Image (cartoon, rainbow, N blue to C red):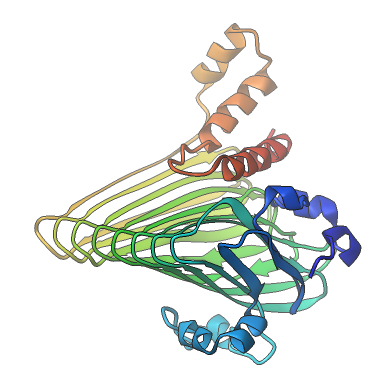
Length: 365
């Protein structure tokens, strides 16, 4: 299917806010889901498959074996809601040994009032490399709920980088349910960016990490007034010498944030680090950091650090002494706080994150 986004009645500006390039030369595949309908999908690289879940089920009989494999249908009321006949979503798969450096772009777009039920399956086959940028947004003025089920499978010695950028509205509730299986020697990198107002987000992806494998979660979250965000990441280190890192940056400008992190050392010789830093920019906001470490073997190495505070006046004064105005100084500090060094991320994904952060700066001053 080759239609361009502009011909589909979607808001181009909203797509740009979530990193969607609108340029086929800059992506290896594309997917757009409007409510429950897959409006367009295509692959531009022979090593990657991109299609709707419904089409994948028709093409491959084995796809059904990946449904609800690492998530449970009855996990909560929202997983039960997603287990419906009209559910749709994307199927993205890198073939064995393929190196897909240019990202696949996937957009989940809520256009009408109601519930969007999504079930996504992503598979990085053995020895492959796959990069995805997923932009989730809603049509201006629409009220509703997004329920997104996502199951990721990183096969032996494969690498998957997944960057999700959310830009919703104060009328939208968002309830993703995500699980990841990282097989021996595999690497999974997740980046979650939420900088715009939203009514509610509740998300807590869990990675199950096998021998010599790695899971990395990075998140940058801003809660403006009226937003409630309950977000976190969990890694279960279930294989010897597995690794996990969870890094979060949260900013409250009047909104409520619960920042969770949990690393379980469930095998010998595993290592994990959890870092949660929060910045208060308003007197009426809230940040609640909840780091958890759980060791089940004596020879594990787990650590965490958490800090919440406000911008120090001496930092502002120093930058003003170097010629910046007060607003410019505050902007520079906030921008530096939100920037996270993400190792091994393709430049296209780094640029999408930088651009999103820059677009959000004006709302934080």
